[in-house]
Length: 456
Ligand SMILES: Cc1cc2nc3c(=O)[nH]c(=O)nc-3n(C[C@H](O)[C@H](O)[C@H](O)COP(=O)(O)OP(=O)(O)OC[C@H]3O[C@@H](n4cnc5c(N)ncnc54)[C@H](O)[C@@H]3O)c2cc1C
Image (cartoon, rainbow, N blue to C red; front, side, top):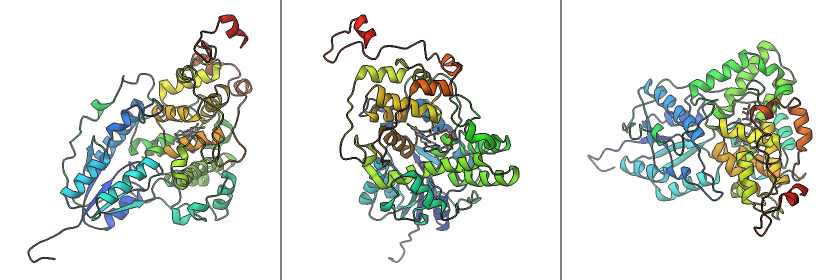
C-alpha cells in the first residue's frame, strides 16, 4: 500500500429473495467480515413490461407484498442503526455503480435459482473484477454441500430425491437468530425511492388482500398456524379449493424469503413435540421437500426450465390459440371449476395447489395450449410466485419435466365432484356464469355457426 493512502474494506449486502434478518446465513457471513456494511435492494422496472408471453414478470399484487416486505425490513434495519437502500433501477446498473463509487470489495447475496438472475450475477462478476461476489444458500432447507449427491446427479424423480434425503436422517440445520448489531453503513441514501408504493403499475389491484408482506407478518402467521393446531389435520384438508386454514399458506413469505424453510421446519418440530407428530405433520415436511426438489431442479437444469420441450428431446404437440388463452386467463372456458379457480387467482393472487393442478391440466390437455403461457400468466398473478416452484410444477404437469410418466391429465368432472360436491366454490366465484364454447372461429378465422359450435 502507498504511504499515506488508506483503504478500508467495504461490504455490500444485496437483498433479493431473502427479505429477512433472522436465519439469513448470507447476512451472518457478511457481518463476520466486520467491515463497513450497507444494504441494497433493486426494483427492476423491466419486470413490469409485458414479455414474450404477453405477461409481466411482476404484477401489482405481488409488488404490493414486496413493498410491504421492504418497509418491514427497513424498519428492522433502522432499529439496529442501519437502513435499506432501495433503487428503482436494473440491479446490474445499481450494483456496478455502487461498487465503483464506494470501492466495495465484497458483495454478499443469496444464491439464485433463476436463469436470468444468474446471468446478471455472471455479468456483474465480469464487469467488476475487483469485487468478490459471494453467493450463499438461504432459500433452501439444505445447502448444496449438504446434499447427498452432486448437483449434476440430482435424482430423476421426486421419490428418489426424497428417499435420498430422508435416508440421511432429516437433519435440517437450526435456524440462526436475527443479528442485533449490523455494523456501520457507508451508504445512507435509503430514501432514493421512498415512493415505492406510488410505483405500483397498472390498474390498482382490486379484490381481497390475503397476505401482507414482511418478516414480522410472516413469523406471526407461522406461529399462529401452529398454535391453532391446523397442522394436525393438514393431510386431510390440504386439497380444499377455498379454505384459508386447509393448507399452511406459508408460500408468499417463503417465496420472498420473509421466512426461511428451515424456520418452518423448526416450528413444525416444536409443534410435533408439543401436540404430537402424525401423518399430517409429516406431510407438511413432505411438501417442503417437493419445494426443495424444485429449487435444486431449477439450479441443475438452468435455461431448460423455460424450454417448450423442457428436459425432453421433442416439443409437445400443442400450439397457441389466443382466444382459448384469453378465456383461460379471465375464467370463461367451458369448465366451471377452472373458471372459478382463475377468477379466484385474478381476485386474490392465490390459488390452492389442487386448483393450480386443475387449471394447468386444462390449459395443456383440454385447451391444447403451450404450457409456458400458463406459467407466464401465473408468474404475473401469483403473490407466492417462485421461479423454481412455478416453472418446475408447470413442466411436471405438462409432461416435459424429469418425471418419466408424461403429462398429468385430471378428469375435471370427477375432480369437481370430489372437491366441490355442493358447488359452493364454483358459485362463490361465479365459475358457471361465464362458460363459453372453446372457439368462436375456425382455424382460418371463419366464425363458427352456433349449431356447429354446439356440436363441437
Ligand atoms: C402449476 C403450479 C404452479 C405453482 N407455482 C408455485 C409458485 O409459483 N410458488 C410456490 O410457492 N408454489 C407454487 N406451486 C406449488 C403449490 O401449489 C403452492 O406452494 C401451494 O399451493 C401454496 O399454498 P400453501 O403455502 O398453503 O401450501 P401447503 O400445502 O401448505 O404446503 C406447504 C409449503 O410447501 C411448499 N409446497 C407445497 N406444494 C408444493 C409444490 N407442488 N411445489 C413446490 N412447493 C410446494 C410450499 O412452499 C408451501 O408453502 C405451484 C403448483 C402448481 C401445480
